[in-house]
Each structure stands twice: as structure tokens, then as C-alpha cells.
Image (cartoon, rainbow, N blue to C red; front, side, top):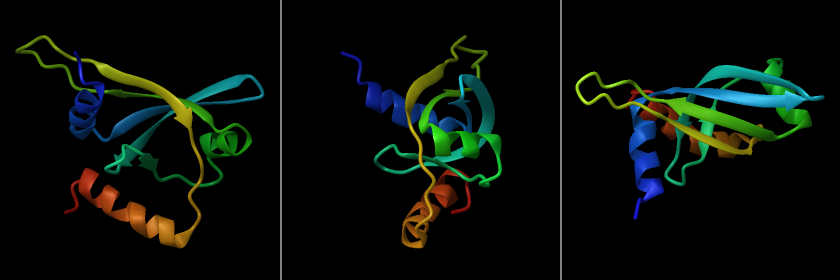
Length: 110
């Protein structure tokens, strides 16, 4: 049996880019964000409140994402993880301090 969580945990360490799709008033939007993740596989990205995706999430927190890995010329393998979920803006300073180590780790600042 395939252990999806193990595959996801291995795969998301290979890139820092994620496509983020939002919808507001039946109008879809997709953008690229740098992301980080924690041990519970919560995904985080930094953005400003005036970005279209941030405004969309305030109205409709449902999102879809994909994380595309690099193509391996030797094995001919490549792929992506596709998923959906809900997003929210983290504003609490204590919570933000908990997230910061994930960014340091994932973006190579440790």
C-alpha cells in the first residue's frame, strides 16, 4: 500500500514554490508563492494584505494548490502534488513566532 504522507513529506522538501489558486465572485486566480511547512504539514507563505490572493482568501478561504517538482532526466520521473484546503491569515504575533522556524528551515536559513 502506498503511504501518501511519506511521499508528500519527501516531495515537498524538494522545492519552495507553490501555485496557489483562489476564487472570488466566481473569478479564479492563481499565483506563485514561496512556501514553508511544519511537522503537521501545515503550509505557510508570506504575503501582504493588498495582494489579490490575500483579498480573495478573506472572502473565500477555499484554495487549491499544486507543488511541482523538478524533472529527473536520468529516471524520467517528475510530478506534482495537487490538493485543496482552507487558508487563513495568521495575525497573532505569538503564532507568527511559531511559524518563523519553518521558514528558516525550508528556505535554507538554518
